[in-house]
Image (tube, rainbow, N blue to C red):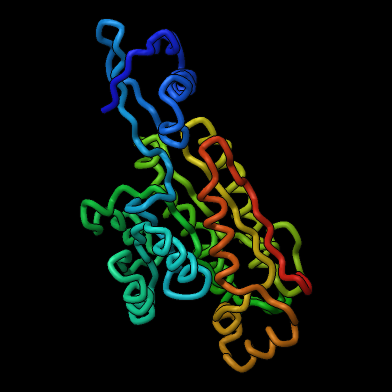
Length: 300
């Protein structure tokens, strides 16, 4: 609790929206409140009592949830967040790889097995966490795949089509729906959706994956508009080619995946995408990075 007597600089909070009160309090209280949320507590005999709460989401001890955290971009993002002092809930299906990632985070990580396409598992996800890990300020939706992809549409298997859409779109929406109410109640939060350049630029033999990433793009834009006045920020990261285990899962052949990346040329690394996530999160409260397109230097 902070106490000060410069009440002449603060307008009556009963007549102003919260945003105006916050600006006035920052001006009256000084730089200490510049990047924090300031909340009026009481007025007593011209003496203003306020609560100063750190409103940043990228801060030591805050909780982030990363889906698809057992490998690739998800694992790199989890590592980057832990290095910045956040506590990271790592969610994925692969128990062994998930355990390895969490062990690498030391006491900053907590693993939870969760398939984003399993609605019951998603609905219980937060409740399965220790109580002091349940206030999720950052959600990074990194789970997704293109298993069976890279083929003309007429060769695509109907079940694989559904699996791609369920993981890349429906699961992303389900996880977001599970955490959004807590963010709304706290008046802060940041949702980062890992999309793809294919959400803007399609390619041949990628019909289903391209459709899924167009959906992520549209969802991210609409979600940001829904919550633009609530303290919740939404960012979409749209990477070009990233060299991870993604192609192995897509093609079902590690050697073929290695050749695919080699023939492509210059690729991004998972750590490159993690840095862009950190960049978006560390912006001051009045800045929203709605989209970040990240391309390798040698091509798409």
